[in-house]
Image 1 (tube, one colour):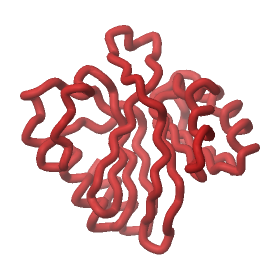
Image 2 (cartoon, one colour; image 1 turned 180 degrees about the vertical axis):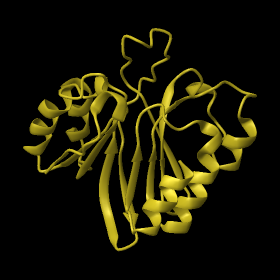
Image 3 (cartoon, one colour; image 1 turned 90 degrees about the vertical axis):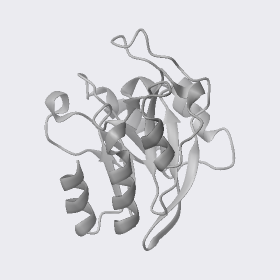
Image 4 (tube, helix red, strand yellow; image 1 turned 135 degrees about the vertical axis):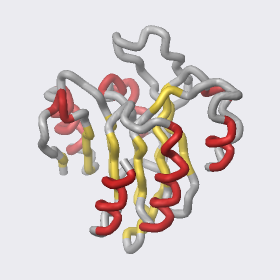
Length: 192
């Protein structure tokens, strides 16, 4: 993960996205330092949030101190170039996660900048199961609508991304899916 991040940052990458469940929380401090160093946005896959005291030191070192309500849920850390971290909780669970705790919170659209790219509205929806109109439709409910929608996933059915991509494309939104290569093959789809 560190090598991929350094490689991407060294080549001028603005946004680096890892697949769902690919980044353990123990690596977050290193990814945060690299996001600052390369002034890039890192979508750090997702991970299951452990309850305290597990990980207290690591989460505290990156500025995430109040995570009791998130324990048992899966969250996707969005690491900004200034080191701030937003956690986007997974809003739908797959059939393989019956014990997953869901957080009743609408998906967030955040304003981001990375080097010469400034003030882009970004939304991250972890898991292909979140790509349902009842979830991603909430992104267009307010005045701050996304310009980029990213879905870190670990799906055995990557063809499901195509329908969402076509739908989101009608809103003039850049849509990127980042799936586990084992299931999705090694290719890159962006809907523009």
